[in-house]
Structure formats: structure tokens, C-alpha cells
Amino acid sequence: MAATLSPFLASWLAALSAILAAGDSETLALFFNVDARLSKATIQLRQDVTQYSRPDEDAEADAIRVIIDPNEQWSSIVRMVHGYIQYVRSLDADIGLAQRFDRLLKFLNAVSSAADNNSGAVLNRLVLNGAKHLTRLGIICDNLRNDGSLQYTEQAHSVVQKLFNVSLKGVRIPHELGKRETSVGIINCLFKLNSKMGRVGSMTTIIINLQNVLPSITITSDTHFSTAQRCTYAYFIGIECFQNAQFLKAATSFQESFDLCHPSFLRNRRKILIHLVTSNVIIGRFPSQTLYSLPEAAQFRDVFTPIVIAIKLGNFSSFERALLRSKKWLVHFGVFHDLEIRCETLIWRNLIKNVFAVSGNTTKSGIESIGLDKIYEASRILRANLNPRVTGITQHGKADFSERFKESSVLSIVLGLIDNGWFNGYVNLEKGMLAGWSSKSRLVTRLADVRNQYVGMLWGGERGSGVTEKEITGDEKGEKSGASNTVVPNTAAISNPPVFGGFGFGAFGPTNGNRGGGGYATDPGDDTEMEF
Ligand SMILES: *[C@@H]1O[C@H](CO)[C@@H](O)[C@H](O)[C@H]1NC(C)=O
Ligand SMILES: *[C@@H]1O[C@H](CO)[C@@H](O)[C@H](O)[C@H]1NC(C)=O
Ligand SMILES: *[C@@H]1O[C@H](CO)[C@@H](O)[C@H](O)[C@H]1NC(C)=O
Ligand SMILES: *[C@@H]1O[C@H](CO)[C@@H](O)[C@H](O)[C@H]1NC(C)=O
Image (cartoon, rainbow, N blue to C red; front, side, top):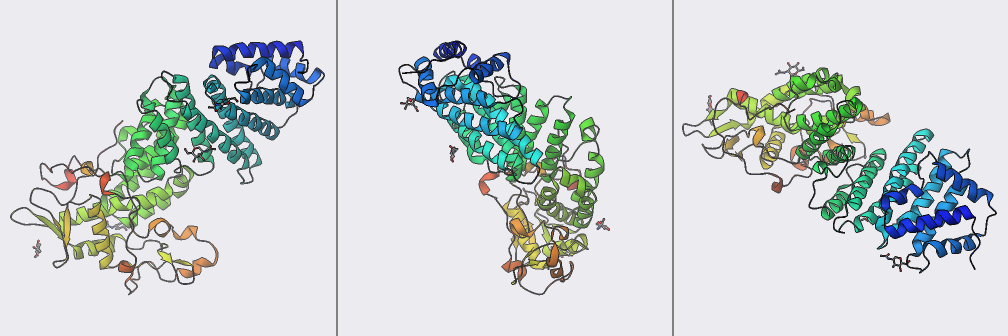
């Protein structure tokens, strides 16, 4: 015994039912007004459902079922449509953003249940629109509250994640581009929400989930997707790789994103470019003059020139100075710590390369070598007066600043660099030498031949290296009594081996034959400029 609906609502439902039957996702989305601006039809619907005498909820749901799902094939769509009527009814003129968010959240929960059905593909457009608006609204609500809590973002995330999971299920349907667009559109929402929550870098699983069901397309080059979608996707894939220390992959993705970003969106281009440049610098591809003169690269020359010079020289002291000089700027763009921690590998490699140029040996047969003591000597000079760094935790659980840099530390570092393909050689402990494998391979790997995906950290792992004195607050400061250059006599280098986070041999391709053999400094395979 269904309640009598108003004539307007009844005809609205009848029209909706016809669209559902036709499976027209685009038109169906027009029935559900999830964004802030209400269409004329929605305003009329709202007037109708608020003014017309309201039946009780069960009776109303029954009346909706009779029109939308008479054969009771898809019960969740009835709950969804009913949920929308209640949503529209609740949209008072003076409703606040937070209330609107709560109501939209509730409705989209119903949408995700309804979409999780064999007939769910017709809801694609609605699912995507809903995810986009909920994402935007959630972030705005948290920005307005501005109290550090991210409750709206988190709530939005859980519903958008549900929508994403549901949208992936149907992706295999052949020729179903709508579903693909939905999935890519929603993953971009998830990227934004995760980014807001500082959780980018945690999305590898869902990226793989998406790539598993969309194997035949490369999202960033498939023109079925809008340029904006592809640009956003490439940017966040870059951020994901960046956070996971895969700088070569990150640079490739940022470059794609940058190329897709319209020249007039200077702010976005700048955001992409800062990460593109940072990823490239970490793997030894330095900005060109052309890049520096791009309008979106304002200040880049000033910030990066001293950093690049220091890296090329292998001068840790001037590198630190260059970083601290632009710390505010780099922190603002979120790349300070990455540069601080991840450039070390390249600086060490360049330091050793430069030492080799000055005091390396080449046997008559052409095998190259260099004394570990020479490396140590040089590094003592080039690491002079560094700020104290946290190198571990003391027995009392406080930050330990005593840098235990000694000759055996050099050994650990050199071995780490060899393991990861930055040197073609081995350590001869008896002679205290780093030596090349053969006369045919050069000791110092050319940067162009280092196919590393990951640039791990030297010294101390996640919490060890990279935390400068300034980040430590309160009484922990008292701990830095072991000043920077004091070589503390203990077995630290052995008890505290360097950690290479995330390295794997599999990530390295075979190194090319080293043709040419000339002086390293002028080698075209080294210190390349970024391509633009
Ligand atoms: C679709 O909905 C019907 C009716 O509610 C239900 O019986 C069926 O299990 C649903 N299908 C899926 C795949 O969830
Ligand atoms: C979505 O799927 C992932 C696995 O792919 C799972 O870990 C997660 O719990 C699911 N989330 C929701 C909200 O269904
Ligand atoms: C390394 O940089 C520091 C700081 O800029 C500078 O004082 C020092 O002379 C440089 N050392 C070498 C060997 O170039
Ligand atoms: C390396 O060359 C230097 C001179 O350039 C020489 O004094 C030294 O003995 C050589 N070392 C080895 C191990 O051949």
C-alpha cells in the first residue's frame, strides 16, 4: 500500500526510471544534483518534496520502489533514490557547508551500495560527480575549521575509497570507457584527499589495483581521458614515486604531467616543476638555462645554482650551506628534506669521482683504483663544519648528535655505492683500495648509466640522517654535546651500518660499456641537463 506521491515527484520518478532502463549514465547524473549550485529542476523538486504533505518514510520508500524497481531486482537503487529525496529535502537555504557535507556523505554511501550491483554501471557519472564534490567539500570544510583535525577529509576519504573499489569491479566490462574514466577520476580524488592528509606515498596498492584492471591503456597518454585528468594523474603518480624514493620514475611522471599542464596554469606548473627539478637533481640531471628562464621557474636559478655547484664538487659543507640558505623556500614547496637526505648519494659519488681525478691510479693495463684513505682525507675537508645531525638515539632515549665519521665509515659508504651501481668495482681491503673490475669498465659509473630507480639514504636510515639541529626542540638540544667534527672513538661505523632504504638489485639495468675513456669531468654521459 504505497503512499500517494505528489504528481511532480511521481513524474520525476517515472522519467528517472526510463533513463535507468535506457542505461544512460550521463543523463541519469543530471537527475542527481550533488554540487552546490542547484538546478532549476532540483529547486522545483525541493519545493515539491518540502511542501507536499510528507508521507512516512517506509510508505515513501514503497511508493518509490513501485516506480523505480517494480520487479524488486535492485533494492539498493530504491534506497539510493529515497536517500536523494531526503537529501534534497534537507537542503535548507541557510544550511552550512559542514551540514551539507554530512548529508552528501550519507547520500553517497547509498550511491556506493547501489553502484555495487551488476546494473551499477548506469551510475558511473553520478559516482564520479559525487566523489569530486565530496572531495572538494571535505577539503574546504577542514580548511575552514583550520584546527589541524582532518575529520571531513577522512570521512570523505572513506566514502570515496568505497566508490573507487566499486568502480574498479566493473572495469573489465568490454568497451566500457565510462567505467575507466570513473576509476581514473576517482583515484585523482583519492590522491587529493591523501595528499591533504599527508598520506601520499601510501597509495601504491590502489595504483596497482587500477593498473591491473586497466592493463591495455596508459592513462597519461590515452586521449579518452581529459587532459586535466591525465595531468593530475601523472602528477600524483610522480608524488607517489617521489615519496617512495623512486626518483627516475618520479621524474618521468612529473615530466609527463608538466607537458600536459597548460602553459597558462602557472601555479600548477610551478608546483609540478619544483618536484620535477628536485627528482632530477637527486639523480644528477641539473636544470638548464632554458628551464631557469621559464616564467614558472622564478627564483629557481637562485635556489638551485649553489645546490648544483655543491653537488658537482662533492662539497657537503657548501651543499648544506646552499640548502639552509633557501630552507624556507624549499620547505614551503615540500622538498627540503628530500634534497637534504637523498642528494647524499650523488654528492658522495661526485666527491669520490673528483678524488679519483686528482689522486686515482690507473695500472698499465688500464685498471683504475683509488685509496680509501684519499677518500677519507677529502671527505674530512669537504664535510668540515657540518651542523650536528641526529645520528641515533642515546641510551636515555634522546636524540644522539655525535657524528662518528671515521675511516671505516668511508668503507661502508663506498660499499653501499658499489652495491647500487654508482661504481663499477670492488673494495680490496688488504690494499685499502676501491678498484675497478677490469680495464674495460670504468670505476666511476657514468650517471647516464646508473639506472637506479631508488635513491636510498646513506647514514642511519629513516630517522637518522637528515634531521638537522633545528628540528629538535626542548631539552633534546642539550644532547648535542658531541660536536660536529669530533670523531668519537668507538665502533660506530660497524655497529651502525648505513641503511639503503628500498634498494634492490633488480632495479638496475646492466651498465653500458664505457666508451671513450676520456676525463670524467667532460663526459657527456655525466651531469646531464634536464630535457625540456
Ligand atoms: C543487485 O541487487 C539485487 C537486488 O537487490 C541483489 O539481489 C543482487 O545480489 C545485487 N547484485 C550485486 C552484484 O550486488
Ligand atoms: C577497497 O579495497 C582495498 C583493497 O583493494 C581494501 O584494502 C579496502 O579496505 C577497500 N576499502 C573499502 C572502503 O571498501
Ligand atoms: C667547500 O665549501 C665550503 C663552504 O662553502 C668552503 O668554505 C670550502 O672552501 C669548500 N671546500 C672545497 C675543498 O672546495
Ligand atoms: C698510485 O699512484 C701514486 C702516484 O700517483 C703512487 O705514489 C702510489 O704508490 C700508487 N699506488 C698504487 C697502489 O699503485
